[in-house]
Length: 330
Image (cartoon, rainbow, N blue to C red):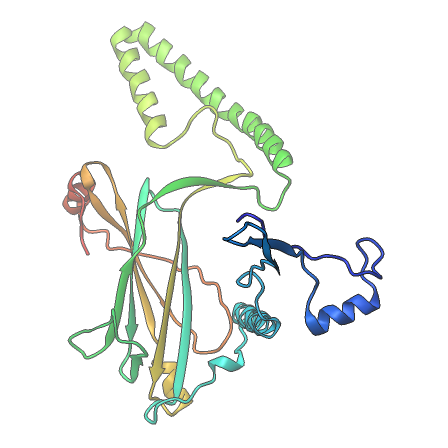
């Protein structure tokens, strides 16, 4: 825009950039004095000055109403207070609402599937199913399904996450734990070195007495024994535990209603969340790593839970099929 927007000009009694009490009163009543531009209009007959106009250019969109601005700020503060109250487990006033006549209890759930720990796999994903017993129903049925027993279910899955090794120093300083691990490993490796030296001496004696062929087979058997049972010359009692962890961080949000009038019935028929942890290997082989479940609390507040999982082992043939083809007993 040429000329540009008008700028605020100081009043006669202002001291440089500082406003006086008189100018502040004028600004509050009539607004600030803005830069005035001049427009001269010439006469089309003889070219003389026919008129002089003075005007200001103000960005009205950039100056919201003070009342509306205060209202917006107040609404943002209310939203922030509600978010803080939800995180602390409280119940803000806006959550209180009129329930249907056949509903005695309403529960708003905010769940997060954080991670899977100590599974023997490189890639993991977790499938879940929220199961509402009879007497419960979702507030919004979109996405929910009914099973053959008439119970409402909500199913979903996490993304496929890679397992990372998480080291636990057991509450010690990391450098001290590392130094302690090096010391324990050095002291713990001495017995295994002695065992290996003794086994090598026995293999050498048998080779000299019965021939080198017997010594080679005995040495191979000793190496196979150490490989199978996980005994290595550097093994020792370390203070660090290494656990593979797959991070999901999947949020699950839903609202459910209950028609149970008795608190005892409410506690006995609480909703369930069923879990199935599976792994993905090369050639897209899927293996079930474990099943688990958790009962949802009906009391207000926050809770952290660590869920143990299990799976049927099956016989030897099913374990071979699971290892090479995937799948397995379910």
